Length: 250
Image (tube, rainbow, N blue to C red; front, side, top):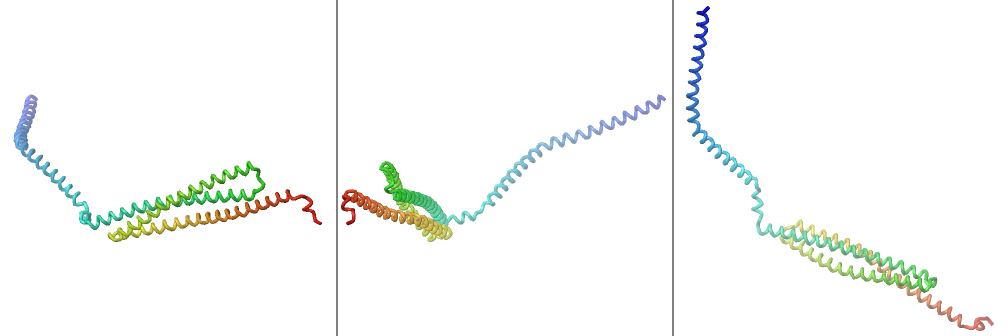
């Protein structure tokens, strides 16, 4: 029994000795490898930095290559002139559209004022001789005020029409410059806008011309009715002055 225990103890001690020897064998090369790997690690880090900078440079080069270099080729004097001509047509077209809108609004307001004046005058003519002096005076105050509005609207139409004519000339000049410089599309667009503006203004002018025509007819009617009323008033006054004996038949 004692021998068996001694045999087992010797076996364990031999195994422990082999393990310690193996660990010491491993530690020695590990120290050597670690001591030798420090310069290599630094060299590896340096290569890694170089690689990273190289990748960044390649990426930057790729981004530069993605830029369309053809744009630089089109930056010639002719191309810059065409772009400037296109901008000129855009700005002149905007100026034309704004003045056209202002002129049309002014003509519309003027036409409304004229029709209101016509309605007031015709209402006065239909009630001629049926109003008291106070009522007739109040109506005439309204008519005079409306005539002032018509006059102001006419002046505003003339002012906007002058600006609009200037805008048309400017747009025509810009369209011609665009055509000469090679910007055909911008030239065609500008000329089309000129045609549209002329059409809209002509339609508005027809409305104002019709209103002016009706106002002139109303003035003629007013003159005739006032003359008839005056003559009838005079005849009635004469009849009142004539003695009854002269009015009786023989």
